Length: 295
Picture 1 (cartoon, helix red, strand yellow):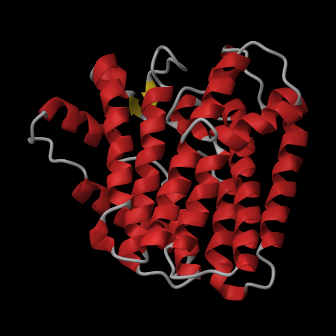
Picture 2 (cartoon, rainbow, N blue to C red; picture 1 turned 30 degrees about the vertical axis):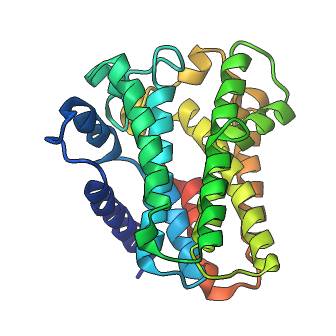
């Protein structure tokens, strides 16, 4: 199966799994459940589930467990988008080509949607029905919690809010995005690998290095797209960072240097996988897709 067909297949599988895991819209409290389904279904590139699937396949993990872990990571990601779009955060009105949660519903519902999606993510990843070594599952829960918390995604958002309108160095910008964007992407790779019964330290280090590089790569490309693409193409408000006077890789480095940095990060990510052969092909293809994506 070529990469595009594989990607569409994983996106479809993730959609089906999320539809099954999310509460039915007619189940009370109906407004909350309707809103949860509104934000989690029918959109998004599903990059994080793709990474879980690629890493899980690399180590021969069970498909059912990979699907569940991919959904858990995606639920955390979607919850973060709902909260990031709120007026008290980035104050955005468009996400994935449709009105943001607080616009379609209301701010209080959006807050509860984020809370409920986060809780559901941990319910999914810790479900005893999935089986597996209990110590390994506990490690996975711990890893996801750290990636989402104050030393990961939430901490990165706090740094971002505090940095609005401030002059940042490239090093400070990188530190922010290692947490805000990179932590959950890094966790996606490692959680996929941890779906297997055991992985050796060498492979763990290789995958972690790869994940760190593509975490930054994703943000560099995001900044390039935010500067170069329009709102219709992105599915979210274009130029928002510039309008809010936020530092980006484009504003600090310029477009040409930002593109060069993306190429360097891509090369580093591929190098981390050297020697793993065809089994790592999907991870390589995802890194290339991150660079080549248009939206």
